[in-house]
Length: 288
Image (cartoon, rainbow, N blue to C red):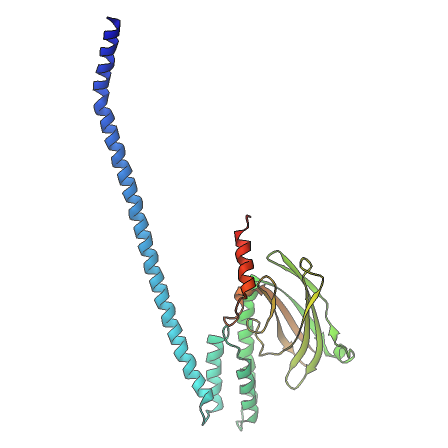
């Protein structure tokens, strides 16, 4: 008798709760469906926005590349034209090249050519043109240095020409240790010769990386006002670079700055070696 009463009770409970369970189940399924649909819709909107943004940026880059290409070809025709052009026309086109392509082209030969053209010309404003040429070079150097200093490290040194003349083997400047991306290197600069006519210094750069080797990597090069750090630099291990900039020069001496920066900020013509790519991928895969 008691068993039947208990059974009847649970039967009644089941009858009462069954619709509620069904309602809750339907509600849960509806909420899950709505939530899933909402996520899919948001994902589709996000993918659409990303695709549209990518297409716009790609179209913009292609348009800019085409414009820069046409401008570059048009400017170069001025310098390569057989009949030649006037100093003012060439100077203007050099300025346009320098301000638009200095990060991807080595313009030093063109600057040197322009300087020779000015010296050989019969114009009365030779001094003004040479000052204008040097000003363009300084502005290009300053623009590159502003960027490289933000992502790298630097130090400056002063060269005393009187001491250089009394040092036949070259004048060694005070070395400096710099750290970039957890890599410490010691940089050693030596001035070997000074060409007052060209206003250029022949230098030797020594680089020691203690964690890699006790050996010193050395490079001899010439630095003048037409050598720009993003283009003319020394390749180091770990996809890093070091460039030397001539800031000022006069009869008594010169001011130099060495900048140590990531290789990703070197000029577009610089190709990363296969070993550097593999090493970068290996470092990315290491746990931090």
